[in-house]
Length: 429
Ligand SMILES: *Cc1c(COP(=O)(O)O)cnc(C)c1O
Picture 1: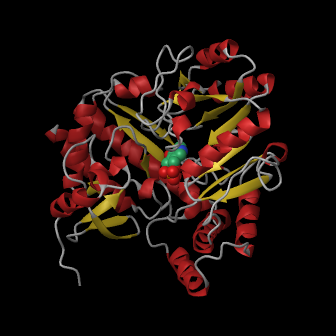
Picture 2: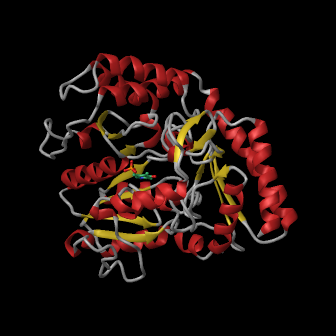
């Protein structure tokens, strides 16, 4: 038995040895204030903190626990694999099964390479696009997150097309110079940027449905326009499906939105809670990857058997029971309607963006279609909303700039309880 310490005392202790007390910044509650909750265990839709307090979970580890925590088949598969071997640093049949399964689920994946995180997947996909095209620049969208590799840590701004601004200390101007940025959903700006940088752009990378500025949907024609532009200019279209993949549909955003990407990156759901990512795509592009081609990319633990077993079990579960994603979407729709009812009764401005099982609430009086609009919302109000819900045992992402992720262990009762808690919380704002 543990002697349970409070989150507060653990956070104090954590800060003595870990930068900011956390191993990933959003966990520190900086944008909502207060003390992060330290968790001990989780089952189904519920999280339990170090003092045994239960919360209904709306982050699902940022996506992976799509069928709920401690999903029995996944747990058993991991246990069996751990007893066999945890790592070889040599090939296994599990890796083939994983590659074949991904290919059977997602469009446009002829070849796929496993990595250990979404960051690695995006970083590697960009390198492949550069190696394939022989060009260095690429376009990303303000508010889209593609992991913490240098090239992606560049903020947008109006002057970015001509001189990129280094915004993260430690990222060199050299790395930042090749990163061009545009507002999400602004196709005309992308067309202009391509014109100004003609013949020098390797790729456009985009979250097809954005989840890192709250949930933001692509406007009709935006992704289609990117696809067309890439065709015309010989640029590689990279869909970052680290959030969308295996969630919005078995074949991710590509399938759900009916748009073909050249390269696709995965993470989160693909590892069922283990550290896994993947990048893959069309054969003629992926053929540049070593040892087939000369674009180097490697990993001691890539394709790790325990991680592969976890991911394989979860993805097979989704593939064999396609109604699971429909159920999840229906639950999200139910939550949305409940939230709308309470927010309307409350009477203050709000925006709910929702796609599939991704949803977020912005306290905004105008539509939220890009980062600037998300940032202009009343995010002070979100802080209070977050804490009012936390107090009532509802665990939302601790930032207005994160999508909520539903998991299929949520029951109607959980959703009703959440809606009631929202009603009570709004009265406190
Ligand atoms: C989480 C995320 C990443 C980074 O994945 P990590 O596993 O955290 O490195 C990349 N892209 C998107 C869209 C993400 O949401």
